[in-house]
Length: 480
Image 1 (cartoon, rainbow, N blue to C red):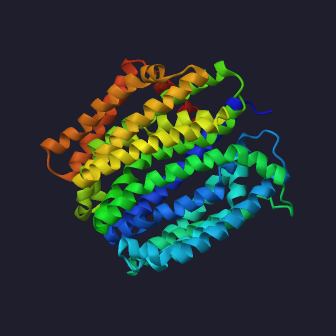
Image 2 (image 1 turned 180 degrees about the vertical axis):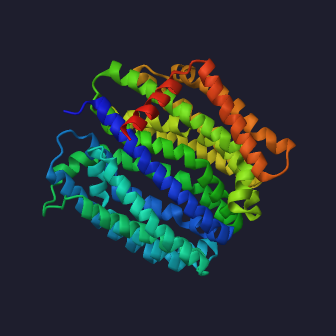
Image 3 (image 1 turned 90 degrees about the vertical axis):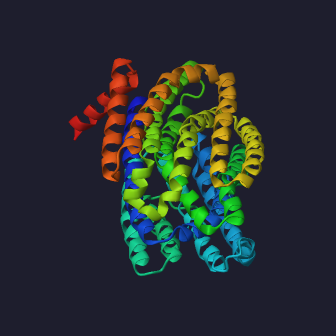
């Protein structure tokens, strides 16, 4: 039998390949399309994200996490969730179809009526492949997911770029997203042999819903508040300003969310298998925390330092108003993985009640900060996101300390040296932009100085994560 360590290493490898392939191809395609389309086109898509993402939370209902956590899951469990997903997705599509004109009226943008109706089809199509995707996560089979992701992105990237060059504007983004859902769902059915049985078990539904419903409510709150800034900016400011914000947010989230998703997807099923061994769980959790900080903190600070030359080179000068927003958001999203890993632990321990309680507390704070900063402009709203991010870190770690005795103080002590080195890394990366002209020179010299300092400081300060990273890369190289 494959050991937990082997399963984790293999899962991390293929999850990393899948995630970086996805982000890499998406990044390149997104840059090409962004150079063609206007910020207003991205603003239109940003206005409706909240509606489709909220609907997706209802469709999943927390059942995916419940199925992964349940050790004795049955075919009846899987089929029950499958039919639930289909019924709910059809109902929500009908709701959005009818609501589309009112959404367009709210934003005073007539084009949104048809955009909402087309984009919402993603829910129904995606629901058809949700269980197959969950099965892959349970098996920690990210090799198959990598194949599906790469094929999907290559095909849909070609569609999006072709439509953008042909002058379709926002519809290039709409149909690129729709094609992505259709192709990935089709490939899940082709690659995964599972098919639903003609059974819907009320007992399975009640058992899974008991755990998943709290995660669903937590996810609903999280989704609403992750998108509420787009709603307020889209209503209060222009679609172009919303476009600058969504592009800055997307770039800031790129390294943070990418690494976090890799770690969460692999470690949730693995840590679930050791959920009853508090000592083992705590030790592995702290290692995971430090490795996450070691990768994400310097990445976010390098992005902060290199923001202006990166935007000029990749997106052209028309996107320069996004630079200050991006730099501020880098400080906010660098703490996102720490928050996410803490919440992941609550799911492992089956404490979805605490998960929900935390989400409610954080969302009350976000509401207060949002409406306090909105009158002062989009940049001040981004500063507010830093405040809420730090507060979320504090309260998330409070319950972690209760469950496995690894609270806020211990976690900060673990990651503080990495954080300090990362801040200096960001300053060194930013320095060439202050004293030199030429975007390519600023980018290359800033990136070199920042990376060299971080690696050198990690070596002299004897960060164990550096050795672990080097050993992992050498091991993979030998296998290749």
